Image (tube, rainbow, N blue to C red):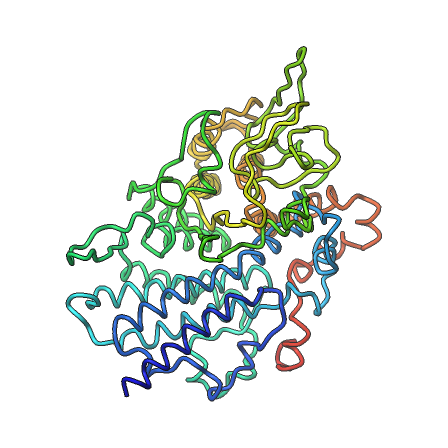
Length: 531
């Protein structure tokens, strides 16, 4: 038996490693096409703490293969990025809202892989014998709560991208009819996620404790950012509440994060090192939940490939900032003698975006590059050939921020505004502004309308969270509140009026069905219920 368990564990680890190698957009064996006899992980695997820990680590590792999809589906359909010279057909379809079922980004395999891993944890962790040293009953509850978080994280992305998808809540070896599940309406799925996350809050802790060699427990220095603790669960729950127009509930969840006192804005004023948020793994207090990559362990994200304009760095320049990107931060170039400086919000040029290679410091460059995932520090405008603070070639291990405290503050502003607390909403937004010192005048007061203040909040979200996979879902959230004109105007501003008209996007985006991705052609072929 021991030999069998050892072999099973070896097979599972191999499965996890192989799963990480498969890009989220690449066609491969579909989760929903897996038969019970094909499953590698089985109930006999979960014998002890070590099995449980392997499985949980593997589930979190599954997030890494999804970063590219999070970035692309969250940005490409909005107004802040455009296809670069190296863009493939799938990216160009997304950018013009003419996505076909063969588009590689309609492949949901990576998401269902994560869901299946979480389902195994939820079902089988309670069967692992308790160990008073390594795996107490509290540890088991924590693991199940984390699995609920990961499953909800995956399904929330699927619902926002497709509207409705198959809801699978059991591991595949336990459902004979898993081959052809019908899509479940988004609201039903979100009801399930709310219930699961509420349950998870009774299971997870405020901190992740690790056992030292002397058997003493201590707080993991990075656990609260990379694993599900109460702050992460409340943030995801608040995000779902905002999506569903449940503003009081969202504010309550966010207030619980505030009350914990474990997160705050990093740095102060314009001197703050913005790039620490994306490069440091152990001393930045702002991240709520992030996905790490470690180049030394051959963990690389796809973001350098997608965004770099330098082939020598591994860049294919598939995604570029929109032509009008400087306007989001009111950035303009001022020259006084030999001195150049960019005025406007410091989060724009030199932080979110820069000019062309190799020095990236040309503000007026016709070629613009997303800098958050290439740079190691801020760039100032210059006419000199100054070596930029950039990552090494092919060293694409920038942190992907799933949620950070700046977004939580803006989520609270959004909820308060819709609850009628205009003064509170403006105060929250100004917490973000005061960190970086934008020079533009605050355009709203308590006498402004709810919609005017909402526009102010979402403009701040665009500036603060640029290129972090948020923009399209922000526009979609506004459209779900009946403000479809904002979504259409954003798309039109980037595509151009002529192409917008040619593609008949006005009528398409007026219809909620036009906001979502089609089901993948291969999935429909396998499952005729995916209509």
